[in-house]
Length: 268
Ligand code: SF4
Image (tube, rainbow, N blue to C red):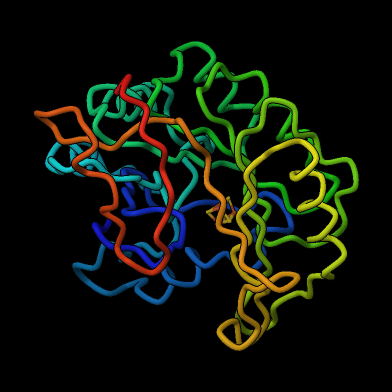
């Protein structure tokens, strides 16, 4: 976990679960696996067991200690809804999110059916954004699973985009992130695939965030699409507050790289 993160669209990460198993082509160059495996066998490292699945109950209550509101990416190093994570454990994670309404949580999975099942039973707290990853047209059913959830905000992370997705379903979707794969062996992303998704978002009025072109040198390839950057964020999903005073004081606690726009909704 970390109070700082290089992920452009969040403020902090929280990993009450570590490790994962690959489920689809988007996992091929999983950054979390690469990172974790570097530390396999290193005594005392959080990743001493590499990328093997592990529950980390000692971190479950961490967000309660963060008094100023943050956008928190849940399980940046894992997938909360993989089969090896007991439902009771997921329920404890959801409870912490429910009881810390000064934060906004970003919950992202490739196990969309289990997320829909588990959160369908527990309910989704208003401060939880539910998202699924979709990398090719073969996985759009994850978006369909997501649409079943009674979440205040549902989003799609289309990263790495590995093929055209001409029929991307946007019904009930409040935010779309697109990005290309980066690093050694990165698979190419055709600009026409990105434009097609951007244009569907424009027509549907869905905020569109273009993260990067990717490639071996992602800094060089940058993140400009058709002459501009696309940094749209969902509006009216809630303010970040503090643990004791619920107002807009915590807005803008970003670690800095991209100043994100959040529209204040004083219901929080
Ligand atoms: S689901 Fe996510 S965390 Fe798990 S292997 Fe795939 S990319 Fe990595």
